[in-house]
View 1 (cartoon, rainbow, N blue to C red):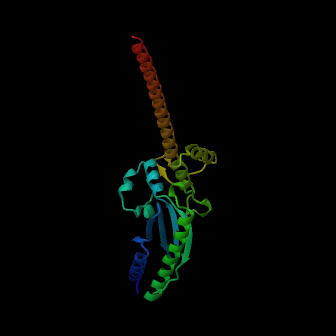
View 2 (spheres, helix red, strand yellow):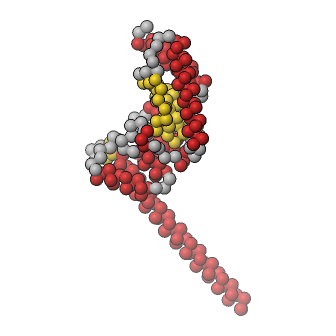
View 3 (cartoon, helix red, strand yellow):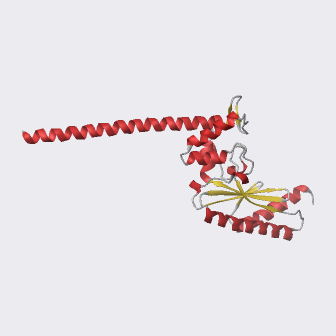
Length: 231
């Protein structure tokens, strides 16, 4: 059996088992959306790794990164995309190499069964995806802490995100994602947070003006009513 035949056998066996557990397959990943989370199994040589991240995370990040068109792409892009966010690792599984189809199928059965159990417990412990913050000691290569920063921004804690970036800049941190010669992921996040804060201040100003005008109008009507009664 040559490598092409072997890889096809592995992919077919993995697809057959994954469907039983409600996972979809694309290239080297299997993924499932549940409870507002994106669960993804990454399959590498002799190993599988289960990760999780909130569904909103990539969409908010793509808005910040000026790549909103990615939201129209297949869900699998959250697992295979070059600018998708890394997830928190929930479990890892060894998959010994074998050319025996029955053995291979049994190995995948164990992986997906184990993943289903881990996911169920995770959802019980973390029922609200909007309030989830990753355990950064178990991240799947996230040197820029993007998933944590996105979680902070999503929950209105923009100043904390900016403080983290400020400290990283002070320590000469070099971001993984770059755009052109002078911009990187932190540049875009800072710009987004500043725009959001400016927009919020403008909204608060308009609300304040509107409320003031409403009070003035109400007072004027009250005075007019009293004058009318006297007449």
